[in-house]
Image (tube, rainbow, N blue to C red; front, side):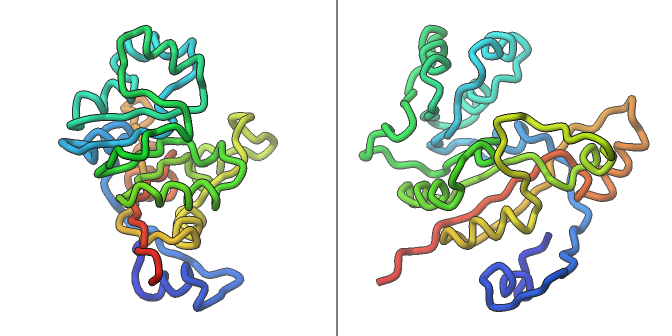
Length: 226
């Protein structure tokens, strides 16, 4: 979805439609972790929701897919924050440093970028959460599962969902939440991992980004008025 003047008017609430079609144009296919590692390159990064389920941390490390490790290999410095105290302690035992409980990141730290990968769908009050991230005064990158993804479109009798999720986000609704919380949208991506074993699905996802599994959006906080 291209954030042009017309789309911005809807996001800002200057225009209203009960059924406006927002066009999603063809774009590169990028894996979520690859995108985040690329964006973090050489920067001082705050990784919000840095842990994982305790039982998954070691397994992901062994396969080289643990995101916090990947970010640490790309960024100049990565600071992690999470509400899962057990997982944070497990990370410390494995040698990870610069870890803080949610809400306890030292106020004297400054960041170039805040990454919030697949966290927002777990948050009870999204508006308060996004407004709270403004304190870091830098760009934020949010990723989340895509409500329009192909798998969801093919389910007719069931809903397949992480039972801790509170929301599904579409490209427009995710952008709307950020704009309402005082951000300007800079860029949006549609993330997925294509499979050679599913050539038809891969072609559809490559051609129609709205079908891809994930969303990623970069936004910058607007200056406080006055």
